[in-house]
Length: 299
Image 1: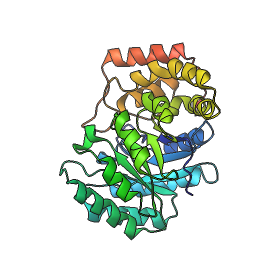
Image 2 (image 1 turned 180 degrees about the vertical axis):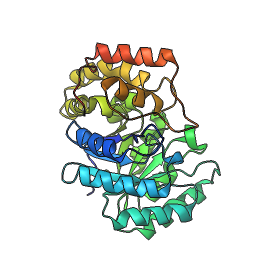
Image 3 (image 1 turned 90 degrees about the vertical axis):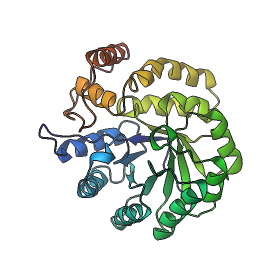
């Protein structure tokens, strides 16, 4: 059985002032996350600003992060695309350097029908039979919903082992859990829905908030799994204002702002993303202060 763990951080990509990738900070951030609650890191996903990274930049990030967390956390490559051919090529390259898995997003913009989605993911899986794949359903960004019956068919493919479910629909998550074997893992794609999704069979979260509260998320999931549901709820409620603040505008703008407030030199986002309005930064600062997250020591 493949185990990506409970808390998988969707890692942001640091940039320098000139807009180039800051690989040195990426290395330090990855190591920091691996020692503060992250079981695995998704590199070059949505939070990593994959739409504005070149393939060469992504490949170098995979290698830098892989070296930074070797033996401490797994590395999952965001190598999905709305072109099956491109997704296969990128995923094969990730497999060759020995990464632990790949996150495969539902093809965006071209809105394939369910049979097209099935054939797309099956083709990628067949091209890298030894690499575990995690599906990624986020209809708010892709314009298409990966339906439970399609997930059930894909779960029969040996190396399709998990799904990041970010539809925001607990009924759909329940249907996926009902239709797939126990070893097929479901991860919440929304920090604020992690606890509710655990109650319907999820294994953990692919998280943005874990940049800041990875250990607390581990504690919440551990509490739930050991029957301490009151404690899990208490942690969820304590972190809920942070979950909402991190999505006050388009991800990853808020989380980059939060890390900069902590002193991390992660830079700005690449266009067409942009810096947040002042009220978002102020609200984030207030939440971080309330949770005692401004007192941190960084590189």
